[in-house]
Length: 246
Image (cartoon, rainbow, N blue to C red; front, side, top):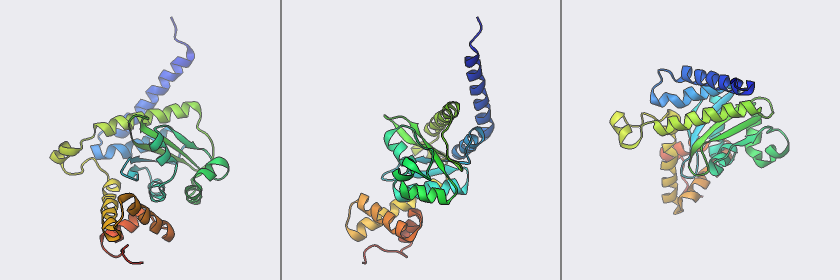
């Protein structure tokens, strides 16, 4: 009995997607896998960039990106504490902002939308790595023109997110990572964010506040100066910026 033509097409699409992913990750070291999968997403989908971030205490931790612009937009969302990727991580469901220049998407995240548009990005599609029960982070896709993803493109994006989730869960961590070299599976983007947590602790001590308020102070300072929270955190850690003086 012959399979329906639509089923044949779906099988062929899955095979094509699997082949592109396999090409990208072949020979990759554990820490390179997220970046390679970002590259696969850009090859497979009508997007100009992709990034991956992990859920962290109070803010996402940027893990990898396909370009400097994608990495910058990750940092913008981390600084603002707002944006599609944070919403997707909170809910464990996809969040698609198909037009950041006008309408509902532009008003949901007005500051992020403005900064994204200023960088040339008009649409963002954020997919959770996991589900409502367990979400370890997000895959964020960026496009230079407004528009929704077609149904087959959404399926492709979900497949890449699923592969990325499995890859992240399989990467060495904890004692296993220690045996293979500290931080082996973490990219420089992620390890740089250690300074944010150091800075939060220092602001807590300087101002006598809880961690969430300390993070809010860092974010507010960064936003007021048009910089990222990572930039301000570095200054706090090296003691060129303090929060115990008015």
